[in-house]
Figure (cartoon, rainbow, N blue to C red):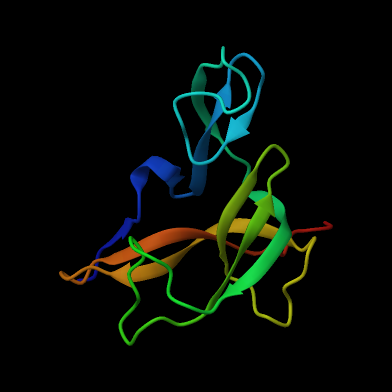
Length: 140
């Protein structure tokens, strides 16, 4: 029986349904992802957990053609290029994998949060990471 886990539990508020958690400054309202202890904009900021929206738009993107530095682990068979970009969630830009076919990808494309396989652990556990896919509900 195959099991799964997420790449880093601190990034997620929940997995079913998938929700990311960042942090919001109590003083100035700045939102960051991933979470951090202090505000990057003001010295008085106390950060608290803040669940992020699941829908956004591609702000910018590129093809990750070479294997990133660790802690990246290539899948079985070696690195395969994938799309990565910034997704505008309204209150914060999130860097993420893009589960979008090349012919559909464009700046401004409506996307929705999902998970995709990152790699398999030595024991066979499939490790999932967050990504964004085209949002079929956009414009409805």
